Amino acid sequence: MKWRSLEEAAPTPDARPLCQILAERKELIAQYVLPETQQVHARVVRQLREQGIANRALTAGMKAPDLELKDQNGGLVASAALRSKGRLVICFFRGRWCPFCVAQLQAMNQILPQIQQAGATLVAISPQTVKQSYFMADQHRLRFPLLSDTGNLVARQFGLVYGVPDDQRSIYQRTFVNLPFTNGDDSWELPIPATYVLSTDGKILYASANPDYTERPEPAEILLVIAGQ
Image (cartoon, rainbow, N blue to C red; front, top):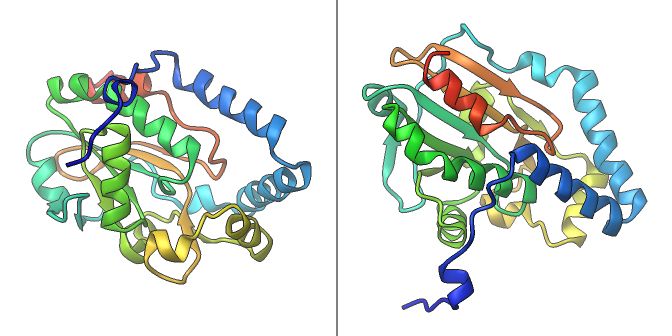
């Protein structure tokens, strides 16, 4: 049995807008991370923009591919089954090691009751293994499925995948971001963060794909889409 401290057992949700939480994390990185390291990450984001990766991603009006992936408990989750119940929200994220991904999923977790009240479903997809997804869901009390996209096969169909450059890979290795371990393969590939809302027939109603991993859409914006506004 896993015992928790009182503080861990009763976390206080951060009710601030997601943009404020992300800005705070960016300020901490600017304060504590070496400038040369920050420059490498910024260059990768800039190059992805210049290469037009966001323009290759699926956009609103297109049909999303069906998917069937394992959740954090090892159960199979099929998008077609979820869409049969109502609209489906999908958040593609990099992994539990990314503080910006954690912030987004925690923020989405807070609006989960409203998503469900609207008859919609929320899932999040990353290349990390089922075990890593289990640890993440347990640590952050996430109450929705975290799906493991082994080899980024689904993310690739959405046009979101890129290879981590060598100098950024070296930084990750020095800071114990071991993608071959967390993702279970040696590809060193990641998806750019993206959020989609799908209709019951699989049509994309909303799409936000951004190579800048420090920026994410506000949960309130997603709620408006689900409500058809």
